[in-house]
Length: 449
Image (cartoon, rainbow, N blue to C red; front, side, top):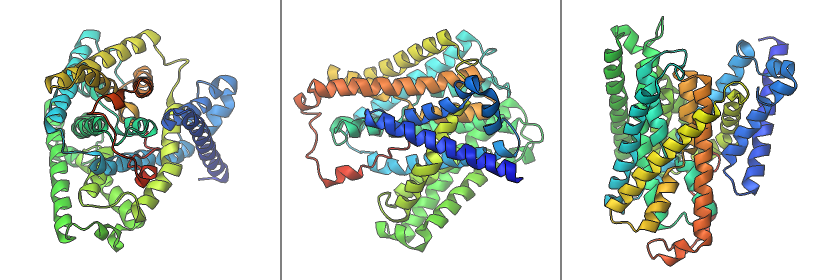
């Protein structure tokens, strides 16, 4: 890499970081999810704004290929892995075993129905105008179904934290449902990404070595590989927990240092690439199982790792998402509006039905439906990885990102109005527990989106 190229990489990263933090803080000041500001910061530097005003400067700073693009893309990929790792690590502390029947019913209807609608929608609208360079209809179908069914844990957690309802029974139900949905949908997304990777010419990995080439065989292989990987990692986590005696203090022994955590994260992600499992799913599982083994996310090496990731890698990741958006050339207003409408109706209606079937009051069921409709960070990750893999085209990528942003905004606005109406004080099922000093150290990662 020449000195000029090094300068361009460093300048690009500095601009992305400055724009992400500046806009993120501005949104946080107005009690909006910082992730939306971070995406907007990248949008200002991309083809939508800077590319229209100073096209030569935009293409010089953020080229599509070459060493400069590779340098920024490496930071972008690390940001996605760390985002999924921290999101997985948070799940142990937000998951609640209470209200098991409600959680199971809402998760079943709130995930299965929208997923089924997504599968049918692809057949109804056709795929020619939505397919990315990979040209894989099966993978596209799974991605669209996931996009309609997904729920964001980080965004809805941050919203409820800001509204001081994070300790209510309502919040516990929302987050418990979101945990179940996200684990299952991450497996499905991993299968879709594996199907595309397995079909590349000059492919790499176990599937290529075994000669898995047909679409049906690829789907079966990547389904089995993703489930088997999750099962194997669970067994490893259980073995480590028994060996450590199940003590939280074991997490801060030498094996729990930042360097070792990062080495494990990168090694597992690399193994996923070879197995044909999406590396972001590997990072998610490592974080999830870190919580299962009793590792603390509030102090020590986990806190250091999360703090650095939230300060640098994750904001650059979300800013790069905004950088990829082209609202001038790759934005279909009517399709986007229709998709958002269908996604909201499918998700909210099915979640409401699940809540009512579990004997929840109408008002609470409606609040649950709107809260679970927020797609936030997981929806954005789904959009970026499917776009990078060539599953979706640029226009659909823009639609998926905007769907994640708009549904998160709707959830925040709705719950804020519910709080102002006194909803969470009037119903005994919603009354928050007495706040304690731990509020300032919420389990929610504000930067995870």
